[in-house]
Length: 148
Ligand code: ZN
Image (cartoon, rainbow, N blue to C red; front, side, top):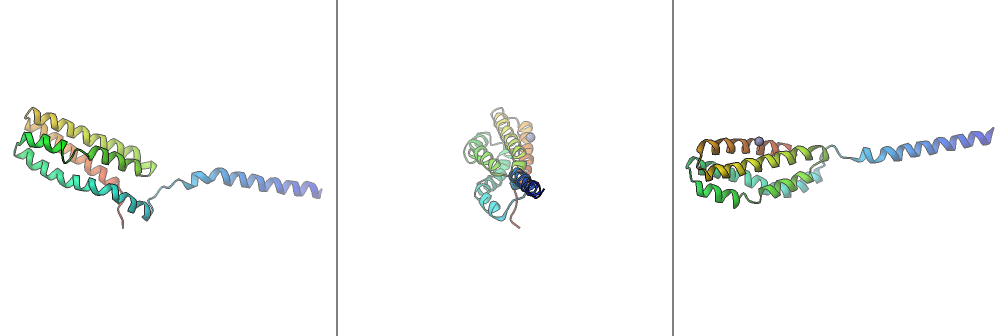
């Protein structure tokens, strides 16, 4: 009887250990950003925030109907934006990655259509694409955690 009892409690210990081991990795998936992670993300966010400021220059170029410089600007100063946004998306928490990647692709899709609009010298189309790019850009930035 006492052997049975000690075997039984040994079994309980094994079951408990297996349960803890199995639930372990799930518990460890982070669902919030640690201060260290936010500091690490800053490196990726900085060039994107500066690209966001450059969008204001693009707005001026559009209202001036400066078609050639709009296209130069998209490929030059904003040329690295797609890669920067995708890199940042991959560094976010798993729960935010898909949305960030989708928004990054949206922004670039609008900039590509803005490029086409500039080629066609269509102010209406350029205005539409610019506004939508800006909207998706700001939604993207809203996903990025801020240091408090
Ligand atoms: Zn869009």
